Length: 160
Image (tube, rainbow, N blue to C red; front, side, top):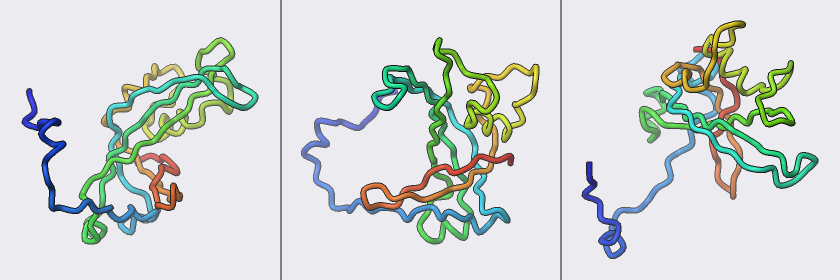
């Protein structure tokens, strides 16, 4: 499928509309007793690199990039929020010195949170990150300041 959008023509295209910032998603969902948002896990991707500072400098890192499609309740849509919006979580994995996943006790808490929330943290049951796509979870949202602007971030993942 080809797009009708022409990047070269866009360079000279004049626009009269302003770009407006949407209001932040409130940290507490008024439609949920625990203040959480219902979300569907999207297509998970990976990211990796080499640690650039600290006591583990030069060691590899891997993270899972998890898109979460939040369902925004109607009472919040009235303030200008869309019915759905995607918030991206990043889960860094603990690795062994050999570069494999570290499955020892207390390691990979982020992975455990997603597995617990989706019912896939079962001894003897095979697990792969890709099988989380389409699963429903509850998301606790938090706010942080970034360059003077409020940004949402995933604070906690819980069972739906």
